[in-house]
Length: 323
Image 1 (cartoon, helix red, strand yellow):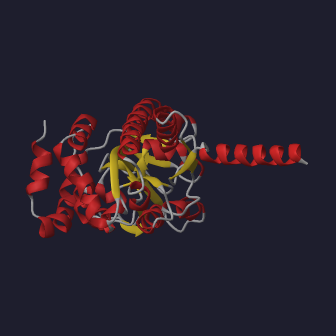
Image 2 (cartoon, rainbow, N blue to C red):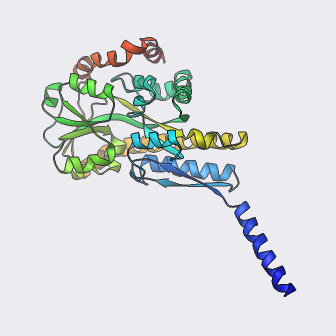
Image 3 (cartoon, one colour):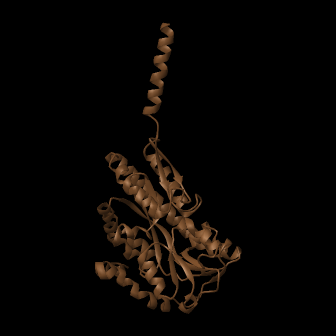
């Protein structure tokens, strides 16, 4: 009897010991596939966090919109039902309006300009704005420059956009820009997009090569036009309820993991940008590369007022002045 009691006590002690050392698991939500550039970034985050914490923290992806669209997930962060999200900035402006500045068309000259801006004072200033809106901004990640696809015709001039029903993000700057350029913008959550293109609810959409390729849009779209009309950053956001329960040391682990994630995502964007056009063409898409962007930029310019009428021109001027 004594031996049985001792064995039972030992078993209970082992259970408590195992539970005490069980890894804390983080769930990272995003709307793209597990093999996309977001997936690469999510894996890099988990790997870094696991290594820094010596196994105390682990994690997994909730990919392909399994936690909802980007707007849904941001709302989930605010109420604490979602841990961490990698999201485009498209819907973020609905929560943190200052972020709309990043969605202004033809604002960034190239990748160096965009990355330097987001890694510098402007990027830090915007990350800090998240706290005012019950979000925690950890790092700027990336999607890339956005381009137009559709199933109707080649788009080489603004006239070619006229009459095209284009899905845009739920973002008033994007909608104003495309209205100015002659299209009919239709805001829609990303998880709904593929079936909407398949069923002809919309004629086309606009996204970076990274998203076009990872989403296999060649199955429902024929034409790609490399308009590069907007640079699309992504952001790594955490829930305030998660963040507030972390120790100072854990916060440094999360910060390092966010930087590792952003670096891995940017490297994957570079790779996909280099190889993506050939991939799209090999899957039957007609790619228009010789686009004169100036007429598009002229027509899109009035959309800047969506931001500057409320927040002034100072932030825009700061970004334009960055070399």
